Image (cartoon, rainbow, N blue to C red; front, top):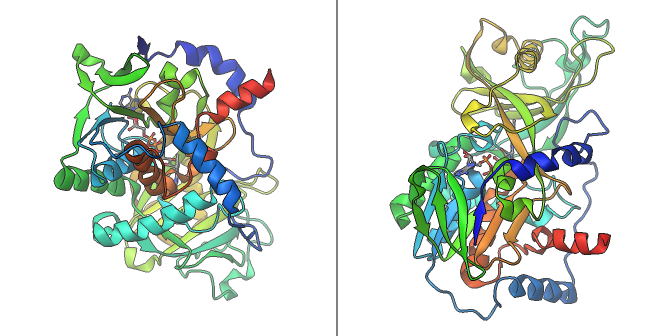
Length: 449
Ligand SMILES: Cc1cc2nc3c(=O)[nH]c(=O)nc-3n(C[C@H](O)[C@H](O)[C@H](O)COP(=O)(O)OP(=O)(O)OC[C@H]3O[C@@H](n4cnc5c(N)ncnc54)[C@H](O)[C@@H]3O)c2cc1C
């Protein structure tokens, strides 16, 4: 049996998807900021843990299954594919091959902010994944020289309201606030609020992180990266046996296949027959100020009104240890182009991000900072807002990891570590993957009947 990678099903689903896309009620562009006080997570009871384990093990052939050396093909060279390949190889997979259509980290995983938070997902299903990932980021950075290799650093995080330029109250009292970094000197900032400290928030350069991880996996564990488009998963006798590439029809034999294709995941009918993945386009600019030493390590979550009475926007600002300042925001739902290299920013959205930079700091004004990038990429989103990580029901040896929305850089490590355990050992111990199981969509469908 063959499963073709095609857009047909996606187009059929499009009208349905548009109705189901999440429209934020509040003027938040995509990331929920922590509430105060943060809800406290209650540990699962022994009974609920046992129930979760039995379901998780059953979907992969039983927890008693001995670890077998496996050849695994991971489709997608974004942060999720890279983390999965890294932990598979580290945990003893016989051979790991990553198939990437364009270039490693060419899409959202190379153009994201790279912001990491320990507890912003507390109180929800992502809590354990986020906490485990935050800690794994810290240990990976020790192992892989994160501060030098990919700009890993803990940093303080502030919420900063900006008044519209020229508004009568724009002579804000923020200058008097000791919390406000000195480089936020645009005159429109109001007193900030602390959202995170060096204990609870950190950052990486996402493209360098993804590439460093894969380079280490290649150097230390022989992971192979193949540049080519995965066209289909070859299934024989109900088992995934190979990934077939579009160019030349080369088949790469596999004992297990992982589909980690971000917003392109449901181009594979194996995925689209089970659930939808939609793309939310978001924009970013990268600036190189003339005096990078003036920019302190503070991540800023802004509330910004471009003019009095206009819609409130929520751009995010991440100074990087490379001397660059990354600013993102301006998101909207739209169709994901086939080719990641064809994704370009829209002029109006990019113009607005430059306007934010101008209002924020004299160091980021037009003429004061070199423009290093103006770009866009797609958040991979699912209908229930949760990532999908686990075995695809009905096809032995086929796994999926997608739908990480605005937290893929944070949640990559625990996703990769847990999925590697599930594939190699039949159960995950780093994080319980049951809340993210693809089979939840089968259950939902059965309940709707
Ligand atoms: C503006 C913006 C800012 C963000 N900021 C943050 C942040 O600060 N912190 C955070 O945690 N998250 C952030 N995110 C979210 C994060 O970037 C994503 O969740 C994450 O990158 C998704 O990774 P992925 O590997 O699933 O997908 P992608 O990065 O999209 O990777 C998928 C890969 O699959 C490849 N591919 C597609 N089709 C094929 C095929 N047929 N064969 C082979 N390869 C194929 C693509 O070329 C691509 O490289 C941000 C996202 C955006 C858009």
